[in-house]
Length: 285
Image (cartoon, rainbow, N blue to C red; front, side):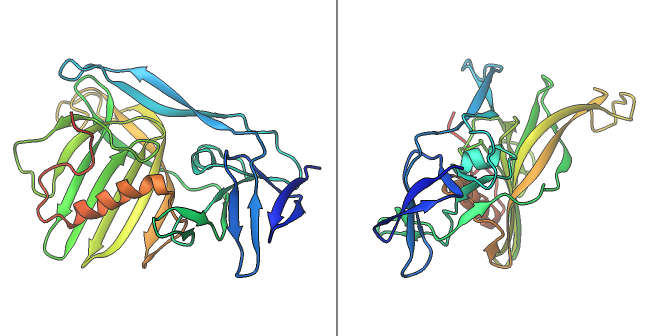
């Protein structure tokens, strides 16, 4: 049996079910009188990052990046939960993982720094995935468009971000044709990246955050006809999307981690941008 010492109201108590695998103490404030601090155990799992060289853009080398396997996780132990970072939590399908809920329920100081969390997030059942046709570049690479904008009372947007919510360099930025509320920046697709879809009616938002868990190239039934959306290639790229966070009726089902908030806010801003004609969440080239 794993037994780890935690602190509760300045007293050491034995916690038999939760082991902290993050590099820092995790403070959980249960109520006004009860607070538990889980010290680091010394074991820190991480998520491998796989980089693959891609084509140059304006003479600048680029790479595609995707999440790999989680390494350093202890083997499952009966009755034991492992407290991990949100990135490890999202990258693994193990049901014995927990992560701090750093969303709206956490406690912050005057500078916005997290003092404590009030609850932990636990893995639920297997989420239903969605399969979608995505863009194919002229070189045959998979890609996803950032796009959207607002009209008088409604708007929508699609934001594409890296595995940690970071903006990505575009493969192409549209500067001609009909731009208002259309697609604006083409982003190279890779496994582990995040796609955020937002829509609103009079600022009442629905937001869906997806993670790309797989990219698949499949034959098209057209037989290579030029008039098909495959443009005669005879195949399409598909993205397999797993829902990770959803915002409806004013609240999240599971609060997103802090590192995704800038991308989510960019999606809201784009959906509110009247007749939007340019990208909102890319790195400067």
